[in-house]
Length: 278
Image 1: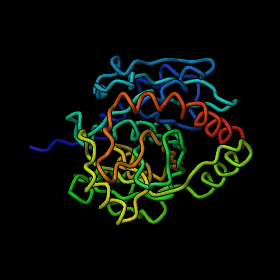
Image 2: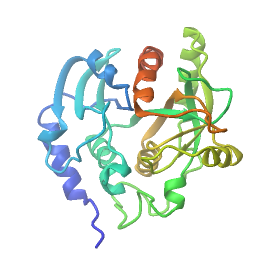
Image 3: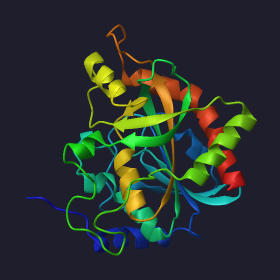
């Protein structure tokens, strides 16, 4: 039998967190695989382990430490989610997107979502940043839409518009930062698959034909729920591995984590720049 997260469950977690923080964050930041370093830069940090939050799903993947960090970055109050939850870990879509619902009930209006993604566009190389301009919801097309089930009318409409999932003004600020910092940030379409297996060469060629530039196993469900609740979203992928369109390369999670060491400093510059300007 299907079970769905209720507003009362979301608010119970929200109340627990609210008692431990001093002010409402202006931005929430979700950090992808190997990108958890940014949480260490938060000033005046209040750290809440996810294991101390009843009902909060536990991340089981290396590179996702499972901490919520509240404090200041570039003078802005932030919530940094150090590690996310994935559908392939055995959680429902309601559980995967629970953190975004809690962010919304805390009153956070802006979300920066990051991920480590595999290149599909043959021009992209490991270490590149890619501004997500749109996405392809392959998981949702297969029936696993995070809005399936009873609609939470207090948060958003039954049939939310998805014509602009990524906020254009925030994207423009990220472009400005990339130009000023000479980061050479790419732009493209991100496609989300369920995982945990990496894609076959035929998978990648198919995804390229339908318009995807990078592929991963997260992000899109979070973005859909964010937009359902009216949260503005900036999405950035860190390209962790080269396109394997001909089957000549072997992709590993260790490779993804290693690429995070190159991607990390670039991503920090973009996020800090966005926070400083916006």
